[in-house]
Image (tube, rainbow, N blue to C red; front, side):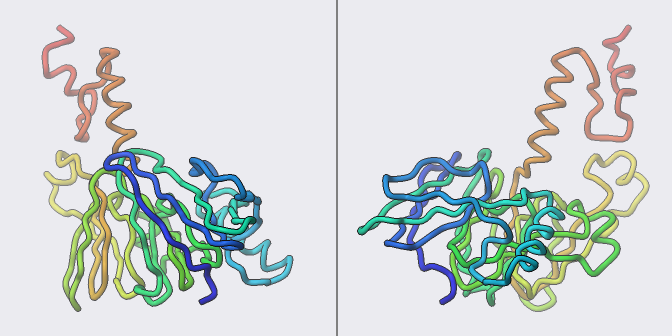
Length: 265
């Protein structure tokens, strides 16, 4: 194995955190802002690039960092190493209510594709890069643009899902349609495209957006019930209503609904 072989344990129900157990000299990489706590003897180091162990020189590190910028992430990642004899623990927390999903990359052929903000942490040696969409429809309407994140290697990685997580095993040719924001990730054998909802009433009054993600097997798909964008939208809508403002969320009518409900007369 090129990635460090780590042990882990996930704690909690709604606001989970994952505790990574490190043997001497073992390490784990994580996005900034996910760190929770660590034992004495854990060394923290800021690294430049995609987090893998590949010694690709200065140019390779620059390219790796550039890829991370395209996904909206920081130039840097943080690595945590056990520098003492014996086992030591370091923990990383969910950014909002949901579930932490362990991904053994060896079970996915060494590659897992996920939304760009789903990655939490991974064994040192796992590469965190980008996956370009090859279809124009995905880039324009897929919710994640032309770029999604890819995790590559032979170690453990951990991604975060908002709300409740659903795992679907699609057989060859089987199709699943999902709200674009509700995708957590899928393996490389799944074909991903975007499909127009269709129907004038659905488009104008449906309140569900204009496009679905179309996922076709074979392969494994992870779906979340509460993407952060939806959570943030509900919070903003509630705050707006509390202030006596727009009550027309969910359809193209928008503020016209305020006139129809009689509150402004």
